[in-house]
Image (cartoon, rainbow, N blue to C red; front, side, top):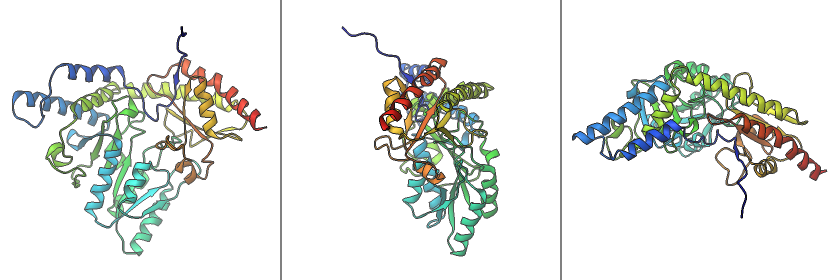
Length: 385
């Protein structure tokens, strides 16, 4: 006879956040309704599906400060990023991509498939230095090479630092270079307005904000036309071929609607209180430091470095205590490879531990980390000694 399962405390929302109850209800209701028509058909069933799809698009657009027609629904943030890279490169074949080493792997690798990526410098907090963009574009101009796209994440996915998007947007506009903003980690946690940011292309992901996995969007600046990554149909106004994933879109819309009005700011304030308590508990342990800019950062994320102990055993020790966190590069959990983001910052890439909260985080989850972390670190340091 086995006893009750030990309580688990999930503090890895920056990797993925569980679907919100509103999302589960919306997707379940749609699937239970028996509606399965193609939104592109003219019969009544198709028109019902079309209306549901456009209502979902409108809810996502409102969250992102965009018009519904600007929103291309995708299978997630990675597809949105690849679509932005492909569309920009096709607009300027042979043009270079410009990106900092702190960008997400989907940004860096999608760009590298089409040619060498021109690097941007970052400071010790992981913030892109705007002057380095001037230098990069000047070098390309001197070489007679166009720049097809500049990438600037809205906020960093490893350390949470908010990037100077507006400063880079001004430089891109002056040079007539397309700017892609990866907002996958920030959307749903920080206010987002495509026009205010000055972005030509903006990618978002639903599951980072408590929406369903497999849903995302590429927002395209009004008046900009880009060639689709996926060809073979006229869906999404000819910008993405294939039958639309209506349940995913409906779930995405439910997550977006749950953050409408003042709900996003209220939730962000609650998440900041959680991360402040996590930071206090972590810094109470000698030799622990926090990476990134804590004054201008995402509300849900904390990146720690523990002196004298590699991150992987800390992660495993916390896991044994029922606390789930993350270490290593955010998209390389299988190998737990050192974070390229921290390497670009000049930080210790072997010892990063990312702790992140979300809509479902409770005080008990934070307390569990605060109780387990000092004991885990002390035990590992004792083994080292």
